[in-house]
Amino acid sequence: MELHLYNSLSRQLEPFRPIDPAGRRVLFYTCGPTVYDYAHIGNFRSFLNADVLRRTLELLGFEVRQVMNMTDVGHMTEDDRADGGGEDKMAVAQMRLSEAKKSGRLPEGTDLDPNDPTAVAQFYIDAFLEDARRLGLRVVADADRDPAVMPRPTRYIAEMIALIRTLIDRGHAYVGADGVVYFDVQSFPAYGRLSGNTPDRVRSGEGGRVDAATQNLKRHPADFMLWKPDPRHVMRWPSPWGEGYPGWHLECSAMAIALLGAETGGVIDLHSGGEDNIFPHHECEIAQACGATGRTEFSRYWFHTRFLLVENEKMSKSRGNFFTVRDLVQRGASPAAIRLELIRTHYRSNANFTFQGVRDSQRQIDRWARLDDWLERHAAAPLPMPGAGPLEQAMAPFTRALCDDLNIAGAVAALNEAAGAWPVDRAPDAGAGPRTFADERRALRRMDSVLGVLDLSRDAAPEEGGDAARIESLIRDRIAARAAKAWQRADAIRDELLAMGVEIKDGPEGTTWRRVLSATPSP
Ligand code: AMP
Ligand code: ZN
Image (cartoon, rainbow, N blue to C red; front, side, top):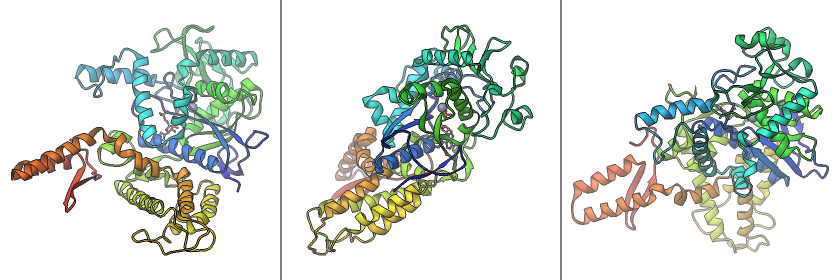
């Protein structure tokens, strides 16, 4: 089966065929987080959709080399402007953390020095990796083996300087009246092909915001910054154009070429990001990469995820609907449910994150986990039907749906239709095979290799269980209190557990507990 993917560059569905002559290896660059704060679930929607695409490619037999950067310098607050503007987001993080430190509100368990930008970046990198691992991003597992698959730009300054030199040599870049090195968009006729924001549209003010302050210093208002000399910037390096820092767009081009394009003349197969990355970020990445390599293509396919809304509203701190993965876990959501909730809407539609949706996702995962257990229990038993069982047969429609531009809802429907054939609350009918329930379980697991929730739901308890030991200990205290007829104390413990998002149940086999999702944070 062949994957058909919507390519934002051609604005149509295209059969996916990699550059590799053997048709196996896929070179995939994902624009990662800027590590100046905790990543929010909108960011994770974009990373998770990239992960589902990668897993789909792997299901189809491709060998995916995915690189995802973690931006630790040069991403400016006004990145919707063609040439950037505002402040470096890392400096914003430093200010925020200095304030927090003064009022004793630094993130728990840290003695972070806000004056040290490397330490600030490292703090949020660690947090990001923890969240990404919880949500099962495969690129993080790769990074455990080879850290270069999750590069930080501050370690690729030499590559960026070399890229700028090449662009200047090839007549695509120049030093402006302010000493800043700019990309010359008029030297690259394809500028605007991805976003529609051609130099003419930018000049007329229709294509993105224009920075009035730099207007007269550049050849064209759409020219964007590659290197900015600035002896006061949070982080700076020596360069032929003075001590300063690289532009955010340049970073991704340089790292993608260095880490993925070595054998292909700087061309990659696939590039992903959120819809807001199309302009200016990806438009500029293409101009730089093609300008430097002399090729007409940078990435053959461009994959963009539409924005996530929360309870039908744009996420924002002031609306109080701005969630991180850790916020949701604190409110009792399992990482598996968060993952499913963030991937189950088609990537080219806005998704709407709701607490009810997380509950539904959890119920869905519980049903699959129950089926998985049941199939395992009966693994050795022959199937009651001749030939392949329903789950094995569902592999074809499941894969076909994903091959149709990642129709995840169609894939889940194919899985559920097959799953419904098995009576998980009783023993299966006797059969003669030749297939066994182990074959059915293998098919379920193969479908889950794309959805990625079953193992997460199994691993979650010990991993997220920073508080599991405390929960168990409170339950023991409560049992002791009840035995001593200290009812008030027992009730107080129950309330304390509830505040932690944990519900307990007393049954004939003792006290059991489960996490419940609350829409308000536990104190
Ligand atoms: P940043 O950390 O700002 O560099 O963003 C990281 C990624 O998250 C980028 O690919 C953005 O396009 C993406 N992104 C930001 N907000 C959202 C959102 N609400 N929904 C989906 N993706 C988003
Ligand atoms: Zn990028």
